[in-house]
Image (cartoon, one colour):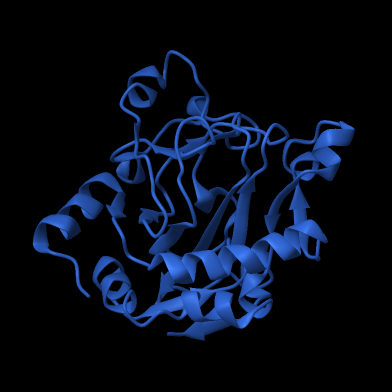
Length: 245
């Protein structure tokens, strides 16, 4: 499969692209079933909502925000990350051979019902260390995602904007203030269904609400880089393996 000229232009312009019905429902269900077992038994490595937001709350300490390092957890996870149908698309958006990184994302992301926290506006590259920003993430919806359960929101064209320091707080979150209002007002989101995929650039600003529904939301995200992109030596980005697709 390859993107049309119009789809590629949309990604390059906005910094994100929705592809409907990419993965079949049976495969999504199989991935989700394994993920639910790992979540139930809190199989390490994991990240809790407490670790993410730093608020000392017993609920957040028990709430798993994501399963880390999923490439080596199960063959179903590995097979999705090495999906041959998506490789031509990744090569198109990166404009070079895609390399799977396992240092960042490489995760089952959750918004657990009634116990999750919001994800504030941010760029993923804020805590990654590479000599280029030619990195793209692949988000797979394993079930319905909407405003109630914490669907992703994006700020179009933000991957190409150089914001001032005043636009970010000390943790590099994009602040909801007068300086940033016009950008935040332009936000876009899509209701996702099982099997939908969203590609987004590592500089694209994005966020998600907490899950206020009665059902857990479970998603899959991984990241690829262009082959010419190098991790900065000594950084966390350089300490995990990379895989040619």
